[in-house]
Image (cartoon, rainbow, N blue to C red):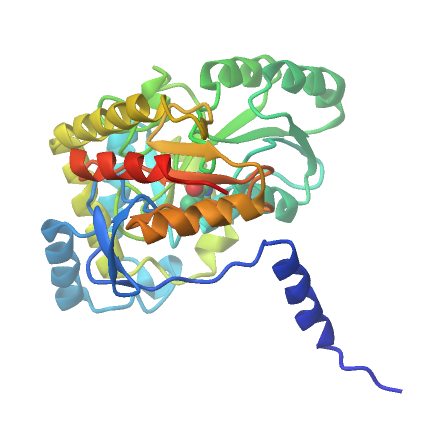
Length: 388
Ligand SMILES: *Cc1c(COP(=O)(O)O)cnc(C)c1O
């Protein structure tokens, strides 16, 4: 008797529905911004990673269009074959200059940058230590590398040290990987402590600045700059798709590291080069990040304003945060979904984040530099009305 080999898919979907874990897309219309059209309704947007409001900025649009007209829509090949352009190099040099590293290399996404960097620098004889709350791209990079993999409790340097004193000598190379800003919580990694431990046990350290770049640090260079660690040897990964408003990822570090990645990172070698418009838009954004620190100032003013207002909410607990990501804890996935729907009905776009993305359900709020105080007041008024 034959059974349908695909029948399990519908059964699995039913299980996902039953757990209130089901996800689906929502259509946005028009330009991205502090307010957007969501399925025909204008909503205030607290769901975007476009912290500085650059994804709809006229200068990025113009740069992208000019690049299409000059270089075409696609890169037509990998960087090592036919896809490399001077524009790519200019962007890499701008990233390295902002980060104050010797060099940088751009990937087609931040996810691919993590997969490429991790699989290139460690393998079967090596050890990876990973913060429990790390982004999926770090975890999957670790699995793909074939290295031994140990997760340490979130931000717990003491356990990390204990693991290393037990395990370090059993492995050739060792790599510690961490988000710099934890994307679903909003808190920061203990960077100085991690650098010290890495040094003590002769480990490499890779920090993912996806939510740090453009946001943290006096010059917007990220968490590394924020903690005064500029110039210390480590591997910085990031994305061009969040505060930089474009698409793509990067690794920044020593000239030797970047040269090595160009020879050994499969997700860079065997994929098409970043498209001309994405590259040009990111380059325009990097320049704005440097030249307009007032955007960052405004972003942090908005964060402080909102934090003060939500401190008095009786029904919702704010998770620890040091970034524009503010998460309000809810008791269950169902409660988070209900809260998300109530906010949406009140004209607020702030998503429910549920397992398996995070261990506990929450409403995640992303503050933008371009939010007006009216937007933030409206959010707080709607939060006060939530019940589940
Ligand atoms: C978003 C994100 C990525 C992935 O970046 P993309 O450019 O969107 O692929 C990687 N790491 C972290 C921590 C992120 O938040």
